[in-house]
Length: 184
Image 1: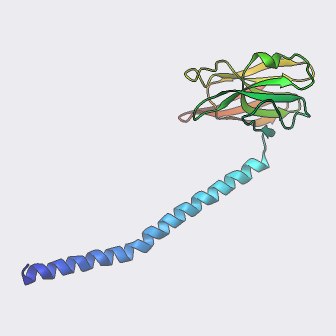
Image 2 (image 1 turned 30 degrees about the vertical axis):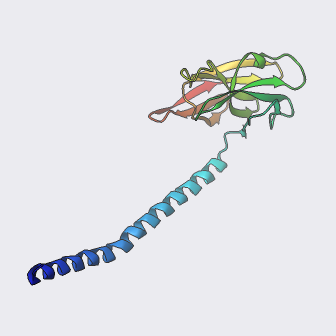
């Protein structure tokens, strides 16, 4: 390399290093700010879900017949179908030995408990190709009745609001969402 080329080589290397040294703290600060804001919004979301709960949640695990929490020792569940990267299907039965309408169906692991009874996902199929396709039902343990409330084709749903005898379900399937109003 001649002296002119060497001079420009060192000059451009110096400019490149100067740009890197000046911009690196800005880029690093942006990354830390992004991570911090993500954590802040996550904590805010957790706080907001605690303020307006949708009822007591029940999470079922894999096992033999297992007592379902928050049901005053009325129901127990057993794993029937476990969809890979998806939900699990369970059979339910009453612990008091009374034959029930629940034994005829497969239910998802989302259970919401309200004053009128239990809100359950009653699967219409256990074939992974046809899922998600289920009815959201209200189970009244006193009458042993299972009443369909609505059909949802999405696993991401929750009870968003309750106004007197109306329940509002919100759902989101990854691309679109909606709200369903149901009369109790």
